[in-house]
Length: 413
Image 1: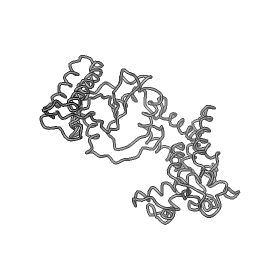
Image 2: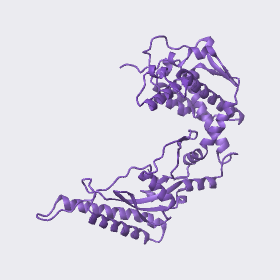
Image 3: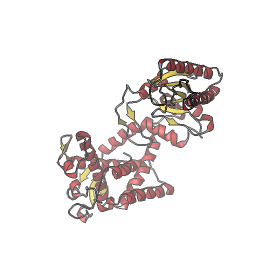
Image 4: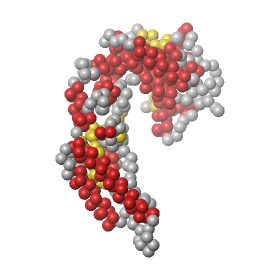
C-alpha cells in the first residue's frame, strides 16, 4: 500500500529500455486517463507505472517457479495462478490504482493536509527516483506521476497516524505500546566463547571442559554484582578478561619454547544473527536488542505490508531466541550453548530502561513499533476501502498500454 515503497520496488525489479521495435508509448487524448475510480480519473502515467511493477512481479513469479531469470517472451507466454500473464499484470496494475485512490479518498475523509515541508520532500523524493530510472520517461511515466505517488506516501502515513497513533481510535496508549515493545523484544548482553582452535578445528575434550569451567566462572563473576547495571557492565570486564586469555594462548602458539608442546589456541567467534548492536550511548555499549521469533516479517516503514515468511525452527538463531524469551531469567548471567562450536555467557536486562527519548523511545522507533503492531490491520482496512470503490475501465488505455507493448528489455551496453 505504500506508494513510496512501490516506487523503489519497481526501480529494482523492472528492467526497461528503448531497444524494442515500435514507438515509445505516448499519452494521447483517447487514453489520457486509464480508468475512473470513485470519480477520480487515474492518469495513464500512473497505470503505466503500476503495469511496469506488475511485470516485475510476474517475472519474479516465473523465476521463483522455474529457477531462472526469464526473458520478456518467457513472461509473455506464461500463466500465473491460471491467468494469462497480460491479464495478471493488468489486474495487478488495476489493484494498485485502486489502492492509490483509496488513499486519496481516505485522506480527504480525515481532513488531512500536507505541510509545505512534506510537499517539498515529496518533490525531492519523486525527482530522486525519476532521475534514477530514465526508462520511466521512456515508457511515458512523467514527473507529475512520480510527484502524485510521493505525496500519496506522505498521505498514507498521516492516515495511519490518524487511526493508529496514540490519539487514534484504532491504536493503543503509549504505556500499552511500551509493553508491546517489552513483550516482543529483549535487551541482552553476552560473552562469546569459541570451541574452535585458530585453525577452525574443534578443541580437545579437555580443552572444552576447561572452557566450560571458565564460562561458569564468568557467569558467577557477573552474578556476584548486586545491581543489574553493574552486572551489565561486568560483562564488558569478563569479555576483556576472556580476550586476554585467548591472546595469551595465541602468543604461546606463536613463540613456543624449544622442545615444549604448543598449546592449541581458541579462536574468537563472530556469530551470524539478526541482532542489532546498540551504539546509542557508552552506558549501553555492546548490548543487543533482539526480536522475538515470529512467523511474519515487518518493515520499519510505517505502512509496509507484513508478509508471511519461512521460519527455520531448527536454526541456532531461532533456538537462541526461544531460550532468551522463554527460559532466560531476568538479571541472571547464564551459560548457553549457542551451537556446537560456541558458548554464550548471557544476561537479559530490563528493556524499560532503554525506553527514553534519547534511546529507544524516540519518534522514529515509536512509529516503527506502531507499524509493526498495526500495519497488517491497516493494510486490510485500506484494501477494504479500495475494494468498495466504483470502477470504470478505459478499454482504449488498457489496449494502448498493455504490458508487452511497453519497453521491457534490458538495454544492451
